Image 1: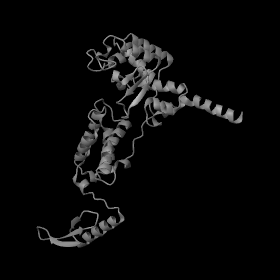
Image 2: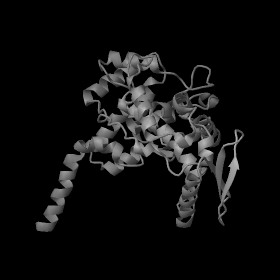
Image 3: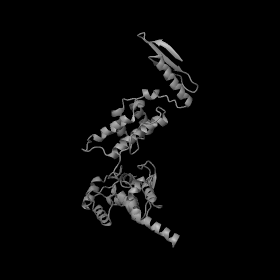
Length: 351
């Protein structure tokens, strides 16, 4: 239905009104009758085909409002990544926050990521491809919520923005000689727990944060396992404790007043976990390990698993990765194991 009316200046305007069962009444005003009729035909056809999408809310709601709603509904303040994630979304609010969410295109997003790649940060460096991908991912979460959870937009524009190619993951692991030097340096450290923390990292592949936040309630010394409730991928993970590291933890458990703190590696007053940054850096320097980071202990754990015959699936399970993508960097270390499997298969098949 087309209604003819006049605006406040007396000029003719044409209002197209569509009433269709199963849809709310839609109305839009045009300068000419032809435009009104064209819009009416287009919308009715979309409704009949089931492809009609009402984007009025997306055109009225700004990205600022959508991001605030996402933070309130989906983010957990206690999460270890909360501050980082909110920081990234705050940056997006400054860049595109004033625009209606339905008006933001992949081109606009790509432009802002390019801007980020050219900015010098507080450390005097530009954002790495990995950082750009993290910012892209945080915005993608918001648009996915707007599309899938709230029905504000038909589809997210973020998938049309290509991910930046990241360099191959760093692999730096300790040789047997380097491992002995490091452990010896940790034994001489003024930090009371540094040696045990490093042994735990080498024996289990746990991250530094996972080790420092470990509490006695999460450890079963009889069964030889620890349960990590807060992990990088957000899922609980069970870690096996055996051999030397289990002996160390049992010795700690038998110390007087060891359980006065809930943390396995507490600070002096026991109210929080110990900090080891300076002690670690000193030990790495004393052991003559240039450019060796604490996280490389996790690479050492995975590398030694690979060299001792573990499959990529087993390494992924031990590290807590959901997919094999992150452990493919260790594939070359499993070549000998794979060769042995193939040789045994051929021997059985052909004699």
